[in-house]
Length: 407
Image (cartoon, rainbow, N blue to C red; front, top):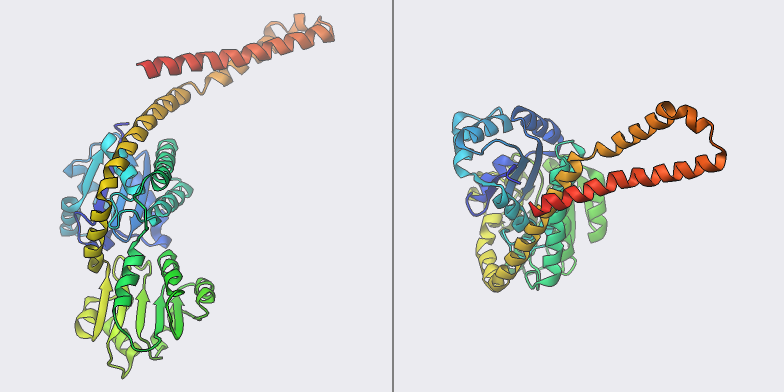
């Protein structure tokens, strides 16, 4: 258990705009994480990136001291300067052993989230694991841990009040957007068709709007989202030539750099200098700071939702202790599961050894004697050997588990 380690960047210790520096785009995920795992000689690695956190969960015998972290971040991004590596080393939180387990359970159950009680995190953790598992980055121990953490999160959502009247980052952003008064049915532009904007679309269905235009790198995904809102889908490459009047712009892409600079934004608004509502839910931000600073807009970003998130936390404070006690119990169960699995793995060669002994007895040692038996006797003997083979496998493993658990 002491080999579970976590390096984390969260909204509690790092400005949200800076967490984007740890984001990896999907098309470079395999290369960068495989290199990181190899360079640090990690047994297993899981990478989780959301709008308010980036987590590296690993299995390794190495200590997460300053020297390790500097080497870790140098491998994470070989283009980083010494100052970048120092920044990451100083802003990361580390967890080892049981603390690392507890942290993942807290994250998966949303009690460590910016918005406590939001359900999206369980999907994000599961999808992050599935990506890393397909890339060959994870193994048996992280498989068991993530499965246990997700099952515990589901239990918390159903058996406690932590998710009563559920809220999320998207719902908070939608509330703030609706607080801005617009005296007509707005034209809404959406950039990105991922999970965040798909969730936002569910809220937009409840509100009156005149038109929705959706841009996305993959046109097919934009078309799918546009169909749910009866809107128009365009490729992201067409954004530069778009000049229709709009009132609200909602953006959330997975880009590692801002996609809207001042030139593009000025081209989008043309001669229309009226105030626009900008909802930017991307980490890192989809907008350059110059755009926000120099234009007439009501800007809603992740940082602006912190006050709303704090109020939400106060409402759910009583349930947190219930959740933490439940998690403590589940961590105890997981530790027992881990010990049992350790026994199973250490004894996994026993079935093959027993089968080899049986084959040698049948085909070599007692080959002549068996050949002299009549079919009925041979059949009885085969059944007896099969029975004994199963017992020779199951009984020692059961005894070993009991000894390990008592120890």
